[in-house]
Image 1 (spheres, rainbow, N blue to C red):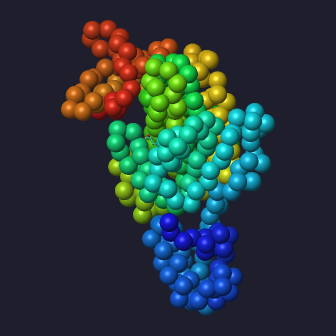
Image 2 (image 1 turned 180 degrees about the vertical axis):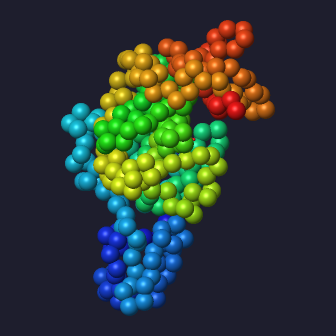
Image 3 (image 1 turned 60 degrees about the vertical axis):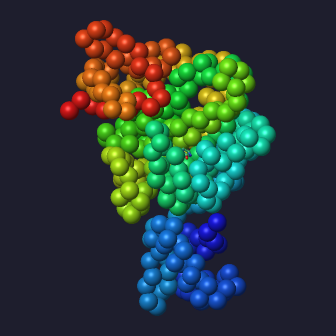
Length: 325
Ligand code: BTN
């Protein structure tokens, strides 16, 4: 685990001299210099100015238990069993799956400053630099088997949009099955993973990633059109603890009620946010391509694709959707 004890001292964005940092941590100047190098390797920009010291330009807001919990609504607070905030982890989804394997974990939420092996859909990597974005996984348990959970990942997309809207972020849309888009680019993604019995008692891990302030170096490794809240909010994105709390205020009640409600109450809100409604699209599944016109989703969350042979439902999995060029 990288040693980031320096980060809270630099989080304010002000200059701190090497000596002041060394004194505050009881370390030598050389040890401070080594830590500063490590922060750069985490992708954190640390500016060094002769005579003034070091700073993180613009500062950063670290994840914080009380700053998140204080913003939770009473219902979400009741549903939250544990809030695990980590500095670094391979993947918050993987961490929650490990916790499930070690014993049941409903109501467990895990978020981290950094993921070293963030997972995206269809085996892709999710770029997860330190202290810049939101990486969140939440576990809930269901007893009705996997079929009762159809449409859950789409409902999660709607819940994410509602959370962001509540913080004043407008102009969001969803791309089937659950990409969160703004200005036609990807702002966030949802990855559901399951453990347990697909026909009975199972645990679902709801993983959500939101780009808040993607640093340019990390952005270079993203292989699709992306956007972050900083650009979307003209340089003033919501704080990460406020964002985490807003997401939990929507996601915990959704997770807790979905076993009873299913996708039905989420279908119309999803359709209202559909970025590809009545648009010519091509579905990609491995080497296969299928062209058609997207006609919203059915009551199970399947994409309705109109082709020359009529309208067919298309189920998720490894399929991706692109606008027809
Ligand atoms: C996608 O490809 O659109 C899904 C991205 C999901 C990313 C989130 S970040 C938190 C959680 N942990 C992971 O490893 N992935 C999900």
